[in-house]
Length: 172
Image (cartoon, rainbow, N blue to C red; front, side, top):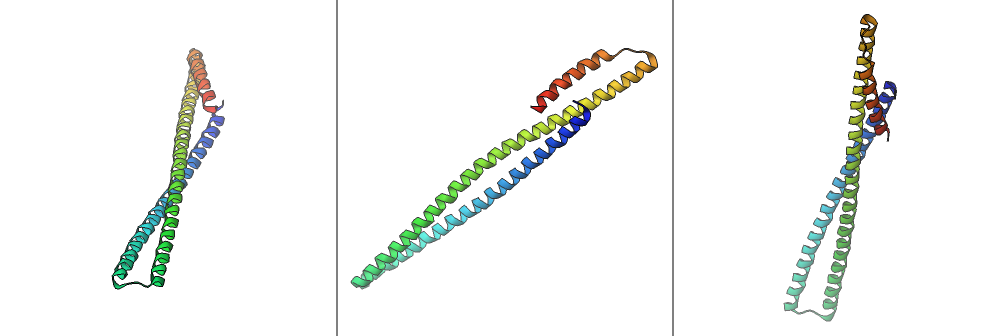
């Protein structure tokens, strides 16, 4: 693989790593928003439960004054309505909890993907640096060979083979 190809591959790896970082950041934001929504839903449920308790105390206090049958039925109906709305709030809290758990799992997937992309980008950068050093060394050896007739292609060939093997692994 040529140095320009490696530069292109490095740029592509960096773009992929940036995209993975953006996806992770967006998912983290969604998790924060859902967590806030869960906190709000739990607070609404808590306040609603307090309201039910106050209403129940008020109705219980009305017993000492005596209640008509109609008032008793109305109180029972009111408490049932409050109980129904409590169940709806509990379902809402459960749904938001499930959503948050799903989003946190997705966030973990994005985090792992980002780390993998980051490692690939770093490996590509390292490979490119090695390739550029090898090409500089080869150029220097060629210049020395031209000036002094010094031999040196054996080490260059071994280094090039090692870089080629690393490049094949990076492309996979």
